[in-house]
Length: 68
Image 1: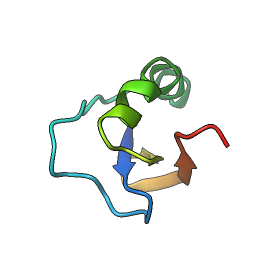
Image 2: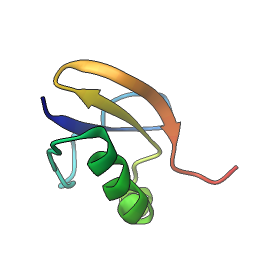
Image 3: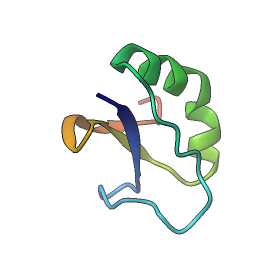
Image 4: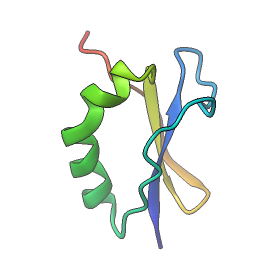
């Protein structure tokens, strides 16, 4: 099983029009740790929210990168 982040705009549409990291992780914990270290860079690149996927299954979606 592999885990990855889907990068989304504020409306939940996938952000595909810019170069963003396309990391693949062996576990959910690894993916979440990576996001904890990189969310500021993603936000600066125009990513507003993320979804975590295990293969093609969505574990959770709509997680905002903004502190609110």
